[in-house]
Length: 326
Image 1: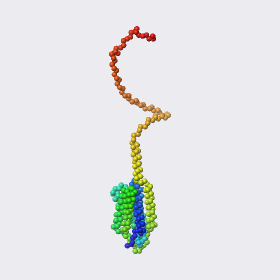
Image 2 (image 1 turned 60 degrees about the vertical axis):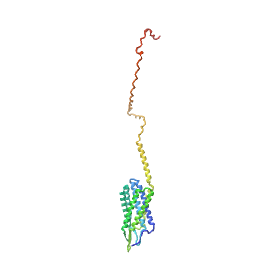
Image 3 (image 1 turned 180 degrees about the vertical axis):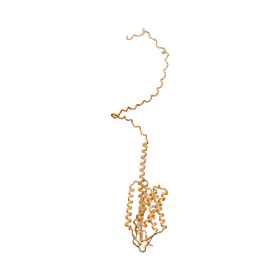
Image 4 (image 1 turned 90 degrees about the horizontal axis):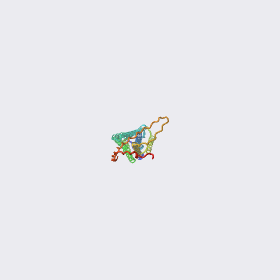
């Protein structure tokens, strides 16, 4: 049995791996919070970014930074390039699948448990695929109980991470959740590494593959730059509170517009009759009918004539008449 050392560079690699896991988890939680307040293609883009952050930086980069401190005495370690790239893709795809299940499942228990189980198994597969990508002149075996414990930790950690994506919104809680997720991912990694047993071949042969410094460092640098770019996108995008304020303002303006449409309009002022164009037939103005006159009040009855006017005047004699013109 050969001597296996997980901390060749001392606490540098585990601390750096844990910090990268926390950064990737924190950025992924921030992106999922942005996705919950978005719709359509914008939501899909934020979820894809969260998958790259959590699966790529928080899990895969953390795993291989920790592997930089792994050493087996008596043999050289090289990495299979296709398998290593495939392990990165597996981490991103399974985390993205879990995020989409939980996000579009609207936080139901079935979608949370299913997404956590799928993501946990995928993360464990990524871990052991990355370990299988190591080429060395030795025989590698695993203790099954410890492997089962690492898979269980991966499923629990993935379920907790997906639950955090649904509940965590404020920056202080996102930071706390990222610290917990970093502990879970690092715990799963070192538990799986503890299950590894290495027996060096008595006659070491040539080891094929890429050196860690020649292959892993550039690949991790590319993923870290992508993570930094997404971090800048998050910082420049409006927060959830700002989006809620904008939505409330738009709702108030829409209510005012509807109220103005439902308000009865005042009668327009009478306008002058338009002038007739030359040659156009003259239309007579409409005849306005006068309103009907009110009924006349009945005339009061005349009083009865007095008795002295009952008989006509007597005729005047001719000799008493006054001649005209005198």
